[in-house]
Image (spheres, rainbow, N blue to C red):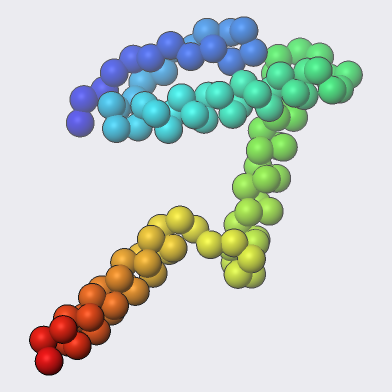
Length: 104
């Protein structure tokens, strides 16, 4: 796995980040999410100072994550991997049934 350097901007500050080619898209998506949340906090509150804005944004994102995890635990939301696995199993079962009846 080769590591590459990318430049990302969060709240007008440029950061040099290391990632693999496989994780670059996810990292850039995370950067965009953090930048958007920090921009929202700065615009909608009296919080000043990048460090305080970062903490408030981190708390907001962590709160969203905890709500999502709770809804998954309570069956209100399903992780994409679980849905894909279930769909794959259903397709295999359907394929077996179709094959069974098409042979007769």
